[in-house]
Length: 416
Image (cartoon, rainbow, N blue to C red; front, top):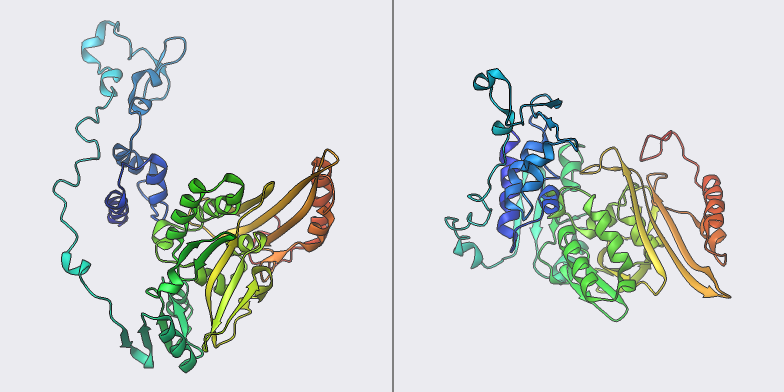
């Protein structure tokens, strides 16, 4: 039964919105809801009343008229005379289509009165004080929820094979569907250092447990406050996260979880690499080291992270003037689907002798190898050359030879 899911998604959007949502926001909020029976159009049409929009764009009779004055019958989709006021002798026996399909008034449902009778959020939940939790499950499973980073490090030292979780979107699938057993799970959802979002002079510091939805909001805020050329990476991430998954997943899935899973079809890892991001790693003794994103991924679901270490934060540098970062993703469908192939690309141009030369570049693909793959030969081909169509065509030829797709490529559909 899909209806309750749609209703709750729309309810959550309305409760969390300070202003009436746009149509795009409504459609985005429903991206995680699948429907195999009714179809999306009538559902979206029903929810559209909550958005600020021009109702006549969907209900005006003129939209059913041809330029020559002929009326398009909504019943048949063909020109007819039922929209005319002068009809034949049997007019009294006919139901005029234009009356049946006249403009619908939404004046009584403007989407702004739903809060009048809405129950308030339970005060006892707002006042509840967070506490450290330790739970036991079947088969000796232990689940911890520490509140301090130091406690996380102590638990990790005691249980080196413990899995850190936030939204449980990856580990949960492994345990329920793949039969993988983990003895110790550590929830890091309430660790302040892992949830930090900081703006510095050189870039952005992002805690490893930050949720994807929060990251999108943060990036959008940064884009409005900084000069445009500094936030090219932010714009690319916002566009990529938009198609990453449904809202329900993005509300709980974390940055660090996606990075450390090291999926070869991760939508974000190619962008971290291309944008020159750095990963800050902390061990159980509190020692911190920094690794470039492009050096962090070692193989299929293997990363430069010891059992005594955890990912602390990600540093994303500002882009410079005439430096551009772009995302790419091709999937079976746009919403809520894994990629066949994805990519993160960056190029920095400098003017010399009235020409724009490539001073720096990075091209990283996902879905074509066991790990996110940097096209280093193609990058070297671009460096120092004039930026034009001829250069791009030459780069495509180099890329075609550099990245050879095998039949078992992670993204599949090699022929495509």
